[in-house]
Amino acid sequence: MATGNLLGQARAAAGLSQAALAERAGTSRPTLSAYEHGRKSPTLDTAARIVGEAGFELVIRPRIEFREVAAERGRPIHVPSFLPRLPVDLAFAIVELPLHLNWSDRGRQFDLRDRCQRARVYEMVLREGGPDDVVAYVDGALLVDLWDDLVLPTKVRAAWAGVVTGRRREEVA
Image (cartoon, rainbow, N blue to C red; front, side, top):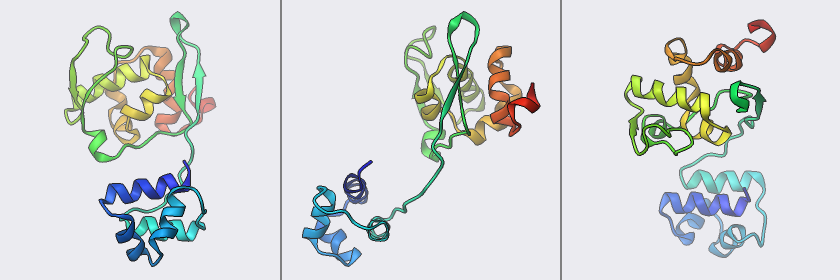
């Protein structure tokens, strides 16, 4: 993501005008505009200061990479390099899964605040989902909590076991 886009998103999310954020951050409105439109590039310290004045912080986190594990019926299992975390409002949202995940009960909504419904969503995502689905619907801490209760095919459970339990694949096998 470009720095300007990031600054503009933080400003918009905070409900601030360019002038208001520029004043808070100790810069001029034309300079902030130049940052947001990519005509100038702020230093990392400057970007952090501006984002901070909008009520956010810059965070570095590891990039999630996925490996494919072969499974039955030729459909690969997508396993992340580490468990993703979701913001609380998304981890406990009411969701309607896309057709490729929930083809048998189309249009059903799942309340992720309900442990049983969350388990059902996680089972479908781990079994049928791709990387985007995992990142969108699975919270790593909640997955660890549910792990022993999930009903999963043997290959799916084996593929995910290392990342869920924190043990390397070699230790699990």
